[in-house]
Length: 505
Ligand code: NG6
Ligand code: CA
Image (cartoon, rainbow, N blue to C red):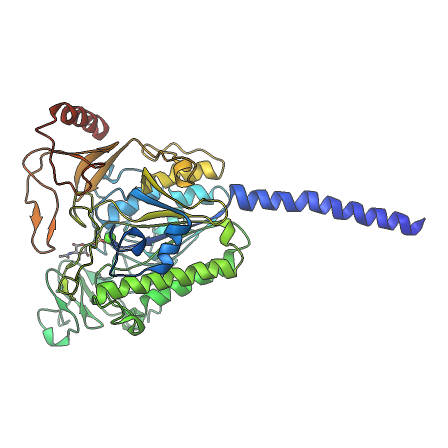
């Protein structure tokens, strides 16, 4: 009798346990609250991956995401440069609504208001652990930053529980890592000073001491020298805190892997912003010469390896099927972005922007249209999608995914497109390039008349400025060769009216 009671009680307890814990955990983790990782490259072009048609570079690890998930052919950053694109993605707002959303110096104040909605805030408020590892470039502090004290506000004040970042770009000072607002490895007896207007007395620059350079500057980039590389901006002190350029990719990978390992037991959001293939291109010695295309190709292969290692970590930690991975780039490709590094000379047959016209800085498609994929093993069915999707839409779409709603002004819920349940994304999108905007609507692209030069010689890119309007049918003319503005005035006027309405003019 006694034995039977114990047996029944044990069975009852097991049953309770199963019904209480297992299903709840599964529903929570698998369907409504997957981990979310954004892997974001810097200046990777539409044609830089073999999954997107590159024949001269092989990127098997990133291709695995494209081929095992959704490869978007009409995936956009909001902009053709870094700061506005990151602003758009993290806030869900068009960057042209904020007049300060342009390429920022390393000393710029925080661009995102601490009262603004952001993707990490949304997730944090819904039970996620949140972190950024890598490039920030959205400003820090409120005015003059003292790099020797705790630096705030920054990523930790706009929704990230944890941050391990470089402040601006790899070519801008300060060339140090910042961990939750504190410069890493700083010796208080050797304080850091940063200035974007004038040099510190007696400090070497690329102009005064060209013999100290291991990399030559082509345009800009002739201020302070760090690790033999001339940078934008002047910096003094902080010797022990200076990063190693060639170790940067491994360094960030280590931080991203560590984060995954230590946070895998609860849902997390990791924004992993790699620095490649932005200038200065500094592959680790084990990747030097691997592409035959010079440092730009080498760092793309390095980034591909890094992505593979990171994905392995998700797998080894047993969370691959419970993690939505989004891969993209902040803007299109540029070859010469200010240093002599053979990017132009060794390009061979590689088409860094595929068939798209323009490049980084350009209102033509190669500016904002970038590689874009969503990957979720076991949940997303592999496919190619022509849906128009923008990084800005992640906020409203992810809100929907985790069972909440978000109606910021510009982010659209296109979750079904991101999960491959629909081939329809947004209808319209305003794209931006160095302050100039254009309208994509369906297959059509309308660019207003703009003053200024079309061809920017120093970077060798057509930025798209013409003193007349441009209209393209992107379905038939992906390379924007036939301006239909004159031959199709009806469409042109329809697009113009819509553009002015959406732009609020
Ligand atoms: C430009 C830099 C360029 C790059 C860019 C920012 C010069 C002449 N050029 O001003 O090298 O740093 O800013 O790139 O200084 S982005 O991808 O972060 O937007
Ligand atoms: Ca960039």
